[in-house]
Image (cartoon, rainbow, N blue to C red; front, side, top):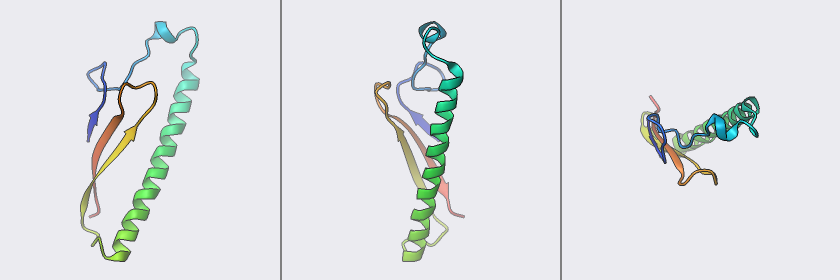
Length: 93
C-alpha cells in the first residue's frame, strides 16, 4: 500500500495537531472516537461496495474470480491542503 498527501511526519500522516494548539478547545477522546466511527463506516461501506462490484463482475462474466485489481481511496477535507490517497491491491484468489 502506498500513501500520498501532504506530510509533516515520517509516517506521511496528512496533518498534525499539536497539543499546544488544541489543548484549550479539543477533547482527544471525543476526537478519537469520532475519527474511529468515521473510519469504521468507511471500512464497512467500502467493503460492501467492493463485494457488490466483484459479484456483479463475476455474474456478468467480466471477472473470472482469479483476478487482482488496484484500488484507491481518497480522503478530502477542508483541513488538508490536498486530498490524501491510499492505494492498494485486492486479490480474488
